[in-house]
Length: 129
Image (cartoon, rainbow, N blue to C red; front, side, top):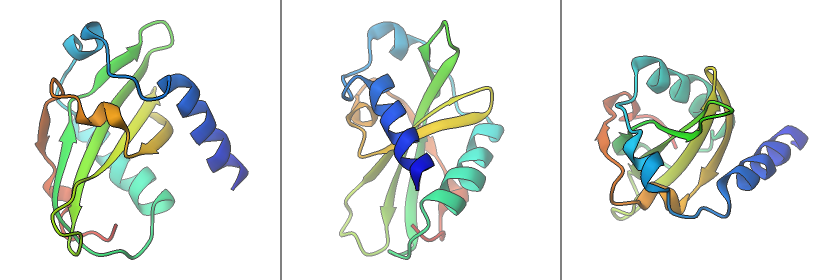
């Protein structure tokens, strides 16, 4: 539990209160690799955010952006529609470096930035949220 609290606090410090991303960050977008997709499913989804709210019926993953060039910190977002949510999106912002996830922020406002491109994420369909 302490680790989760520490990771969330560190991510909030990095996030700067979820301010919109700068244009240079938006310009650094690249499609998510298969490794990024699989890391999300293996590390974040199955181990950290496991609770039985319902099946995912629709999922999207955003482009990966470079948040901090000096520290090589990258970020991406995942948005899903759970089966019984009445069509509401659930967002999760993820930051990582060297394949290690640094933290995750539920309902991260940066995930709603209109400049951020999203891609289908069918690997999530049918999973429990």
